[in-house]
Figure 1: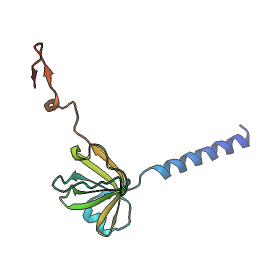
Figure 2 (figure 1 turned 180 degrees about the vertical axis):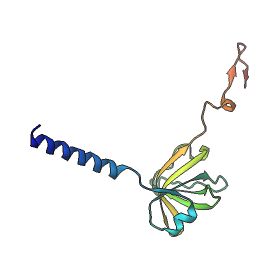
Figure 3 (figure 1 turned 90 degrees about the vertical axis):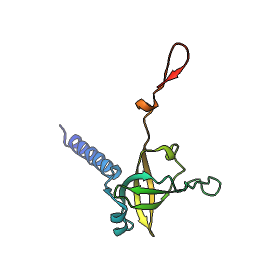
Figure 4 (figure 1 turned 120 degrees about the vertical axis):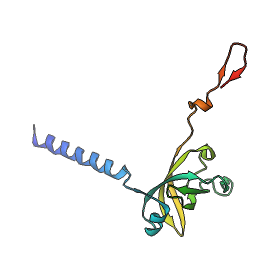
Length: 136
């Protein structure tokens, strides 16, 4: 191989490595207590939606802001400010993973992943018999 081919391959490998390193999440998974000890540091918090608290989303006032409360896996509840429109199915989610940081006692999330109940769960499965009656 020519020296220019080797240099080109090396350059491409460095670009691919840089691209992967840039867009791979390096955030660590913590609870709200640990996130509060490192304000401003990017981290991941997993938990569940606190259904007793309202989900606040007003697209007329701010279409990129959703506010709700979440309980982490350690049982601590925190106010969440999601910098996105309200995700469809938020109220039905089984669990939530948030990526962001603590700011003034609130968790400001930039990304959110939800696990929603499966439509294939046995409790959600309805059979219809030949007479048209439904049975579980």
